Image 1 (cartoon, rainbow, N blue to C red):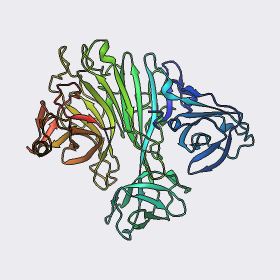
Image 2 (image 1 turned 45 degrees about the horizontal axis):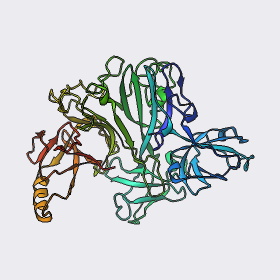
Image 3 (image 1 turned 120 degrees about the vertical axis):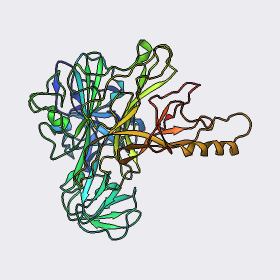
Image 4 (image 1 turned 30 degrees about the vertical axis):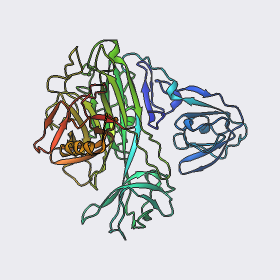
Length: 507
């Protein structure tokens, strides 16, 4: 996640708390050296929140997301560990210039010592009550007070005049009351507001050429998370916060980390002075926000602990939006590691309603909860896993957590969601396969979207996770919703040869 662009904010190894946002001080590891570097670098210019560094050697495409450790600079802020956000060539990169307010040009240019640090090289063997806090993707609400000239195209790149700020248009909402654009930030502008957006300047669609004027201060809704190692298991908290209004005690996790109630053993948001669990946060993986209520990974045996984490790119570029979706996949069979996987995750959804400002959901496969109970402080109770196969019992099913955030007043609250797919698509697959396949099965698998739904709402379509057909068969375990045209997806992620379950990661 660090290499993908989730920004380290604070951490503890169970005995020492660090809140400097300095990746070199991260108690969960500062990375290992992947390029020993030399002493001939220069910081030449700053633009769009990034500083250009030249005079390097051996830079490769995979260095994006790694960190450039600089020393010997005349400016103290430059002598830090900076994330590489763009690779320009084998000798130059652009680094994040905001975390340490990088100064350019540096008076010692041509003689800066550097090396490349890779967070993927760290091994994590941490003690009880260690925790880690990071910041992920943002969604902007750009206020407007007049209807656009021309019609914007959803998904197009938009640019603000004078500031040069750019972003992806996710939605456009205009009525007689609150009106705004929903934007995924891309290129940082030179304006005085969040991500360089500033009131009073015109926004133009790159494809549609439609225009509208920003009128008011933009709001940056940013996601943060806390991973807490409690004894032998984990808890995980997620939140989406107003980066200005909620950057206070009892607000953003990164702000809570600096409070007295957050200690080397008590993570942000758990309890104590200035460290309350924010109203904008929810528990992704735990039965509560205090120690002793953690959910252990289902299953037993050493093979159960084999797993993998993947994360989509969370570093925005010109013409490219940050994503930041991640999944934790792990085996749920104690004796057969190839029988199946279970998946936790934080995932982007697409096809949201125009005014939706929170286009991400969390995935919890198998926590037992009351349907649509809207309980954001508990992930439910632990389901039972049989010893012979991968079947969840106790009526467990996949559920999703997300936020109704429309900036339009009630209802704007945490929502428990369920996934579904259109049952009619299964028959379509059978008919299609009958037409295009002859002889032995060629292994053709046709993917179909999974829709995340809640009470009286459709959240959107999962970007990275799809249902796919096995010879026209629908999942072996499913539940019908009130609409017989939709089938609710079961808890399992099966990857073995006899699989009939619907989940597929399409990273």
